[in-house]
Image 1 (cartoon, rainbow, N blue to C red):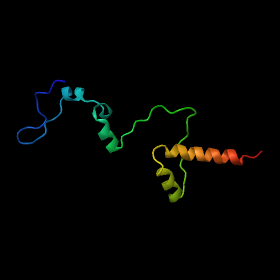
Image 2 (cartoon, helix red, strand yellow):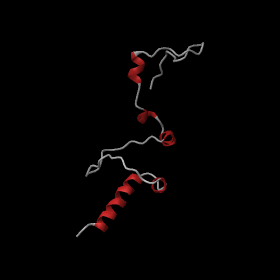
Image 3 (tube, rainbow, N blue to C red):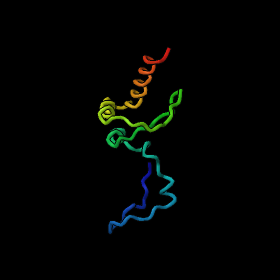
Image 4 (cartoon, rainbow, N blue to C red):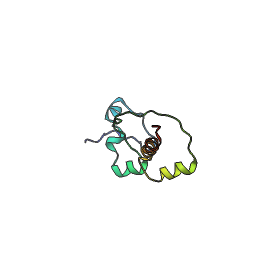
Length: 94
């Protein structure tokens, strides 16, 4: 990759205005940040939702229940969905 001969900061420490050529060189952070920094920043990228698609809702849970699920790590919301499905399967009217 060639370096821009026009530095971003002048001798007085002032940042120059960005040009159209500068903007053309910009890339998404997901392409340029190292994985270690993305992890530290908590950057995650979701893929397409699996079938069947889920519906976004608002639900009120006790703080302790929520903390316990969150403590299980990534995917805790899916585990809540699974726990609710298990309960429904065990308590369906026959």
